[in-house]
Length: 155
Image (spheres, rainbow, N blue to C red):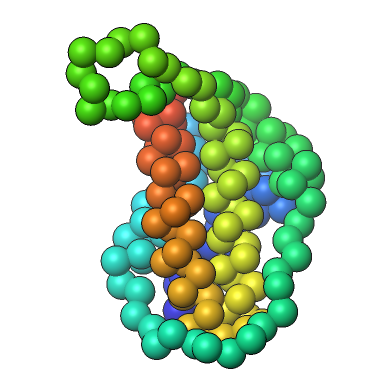
C-alpha cells in the first residue's frame, strides 16, 4: 500500500506545489509523470479489499484553482487537444470535442488526493473502494486522454 501512496504523492506534487523540478527539462518531467500515471493504472488491477460499511467524514480537498495554477506552472504547455466523441463511429469525422491536458491532470490529482486522504484518515478499505470507483468512473478517462496528449506532444 505504501507504493500506492508514494505514487500518488509523486503525481500530486505537480498540483500541490508550483515550479517542481525546474532543473529538469520538460521531457524528463513528462516522462516521470507518465511513469507514475502508468503505475497508478497498474495498481488498479491489484485492488483487493472488503467493503467498509462505516460512516466516515467527507473529504475536503484542495482549492481547484490552486491545483490548476500549480499544474500550469509545472507544465506550461499542457494545453488543449482534440478528441472524437465516438471513436467507434468510424464514418463520422465531424463530431469532435476539446480536452485540456492541465484539466485532465488536475482531475486526476484531486481524485488521487481523496484516495490518499481516505486511506490515511478513514480506512484502507474505504480508500481502496474510492480508488476503484473513481478510477472506473473518472480517473481512467482523464488518464488515457492525458497519456495520448503527452505521446503526441512529446514524442
